[in-house]
Length: 176
Image (cartoon, rainbow, N blue to C red; front, top):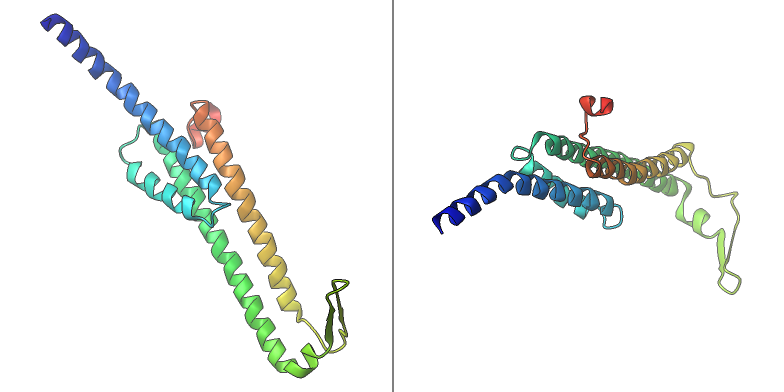
């Protein structure tokens, strides 16, 4: 009986590091899913993923730690790109509002007519003008948003694949 108990304790103790590594790996895989899901849920899952990554970063094994750092990097790059897109959109809206006030309410809105039966918008564009910076900022907003979307799809996918195949992220990982 004592011998069986010692054997069970030795087996449990030997399995603990493997079990902990599996738990850390699973949590990192879930984080990649959360980062990918942040595209569809306004970034909230990404916020949860980065909090988990920061919390687990110092306790995880070295290979998993590279993935947690990569997840943190994914979040902050996406956050920065989102801020840039938001700034461009708000600047475009502000410039359009200033332009709208300069042209005048009457000249702008009286030139529009909407035919709901045919779903056609007819307008006299002679009085309506859109400043070139506004168009440029709208295009920049769209491009930055697309880059952010692609980043939030591709980067977690690459990290997930590398982790699923037991490869780390980083300089040494490129040689493996």
